Amino acid sequence: MNMIRKASAIILSLMVVFFTVLSILAIWDIIQVEDIFKKSISTLFVLFVAAAIMLFLFAVVFKGDENAPRPPKNPPMG
Image (tube, rainbow, N blue to C red; front, side, top):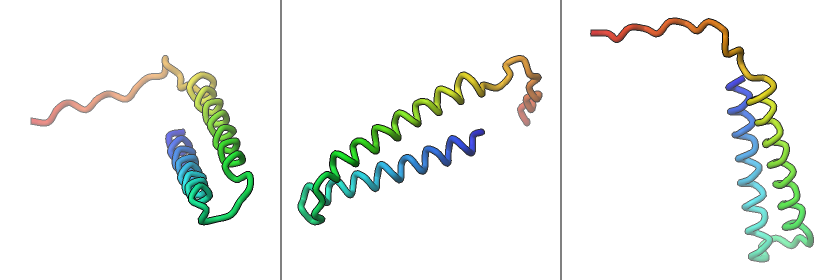
């Protein structure tokens, strides 16, 4: 479960960086695109909503069993 969260965070972070660089290039007229800024913001908003829903699902629905026995802690050495 932790691995899925890390992978999702990495993918979303890379997409944010990609769209940010694309938007900056469009602002400085290095690349010519017409509606790239609006589409980029819309895409980031959709990704944000999807990530918020996934976070809610993992936190509430797929929550670990609180009554499950936990492994014993190791005693301090020395």
